[in-house]
Amino acid sequence: MVVFVTAAIAILQIATWMGTATEEIAVVVGPTLGGLLNATFGNATELIIALVALNAGLIEVVKASVTGSIIGNLLLVMGLSMFLGGLRYKEQEFQPIVARVSASSMNLAVIAMLLPTAMNYTSPGISFATMQSLSVTVAIVLIGVYALTLLFSMKTHAYLYDVGVAEEDIKIMAESNLVPENPTEKPNLKLWTGVLPGATVLVAVESELLVATLEEATSKLGLTALFTGVILLPIVGNAAEHATAVTVAMKNKMDLAVSVAVGSSLQIALFVAPVLVLVGWWWGSRWI
Image 1 (cartoon, rainbow, N blue to C red):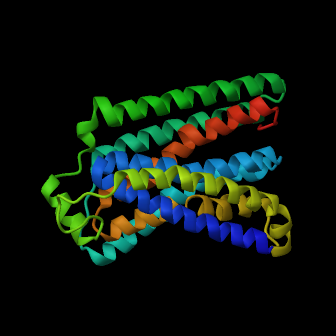
Image 2 (image 1 turned 30 degrees about the horizontal axis):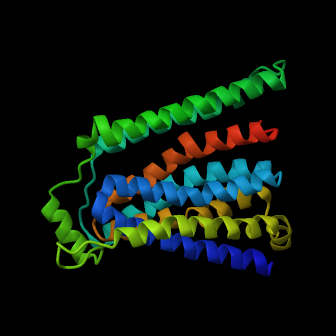
Image 3 (image 1 turned 60 degrees about the horizontal axis):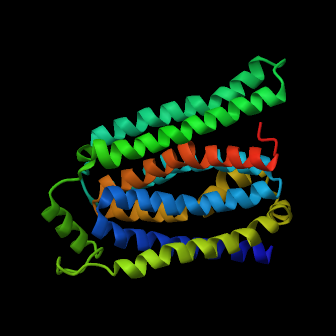
């Protein structure tokens, strides 16, 4: 129990470092790429925990964790961002085009993720090998869609993701203590880009300890595998996105908050879940 609790606390602290690092990097590279970095390294925590749990044979916990991460980012994180940001600012704005594109991508991802399950329940005569091939195919397609969404948002239609006038961004960031008052002073990019991979390694170590004690600790707490996967692990694994999205929303940076929260859910659905399916198939695990 002590190891489980301390490992969870350690992951939360390391995730905070990762969130701070991506905020500082976002000042230099811009909020769109900054949101992508935050979601990527925040979901690296989730992916590492899920891979360790998958390797330990905790398949149901992993599947519940993927579902909980998507729901948590779209409902809990986005809801808290809008609620707490709205308490400080009467009106907050974000790009509606970005929201529509993200919603369309999420609808596609949800339909694709439900397809193997629907086939499994409606066609009981289909062999496991066929269902596994379908799951692997869907996973590969989703990863391809994720790559195309990155190309769309960062290359071909990057102008849709602009967040406004640069001077206003600098003013808001300065007021929010995201950057020094002097706009010519920039964060130490080398330092923070070094913090990210270092923190990722530490998360991997702590994840091993967390998963190793997961079953015994949760049984002592009276928690089910479903609750652990849907609620507990996503909160621990996505702490970086949770903290960053809410913080920047309270600093009137709703564009970045939406980018982080929605982008994180999309990465879970379009990248993390398919990668786990492929890894499970490679390891011979029964994911269906």
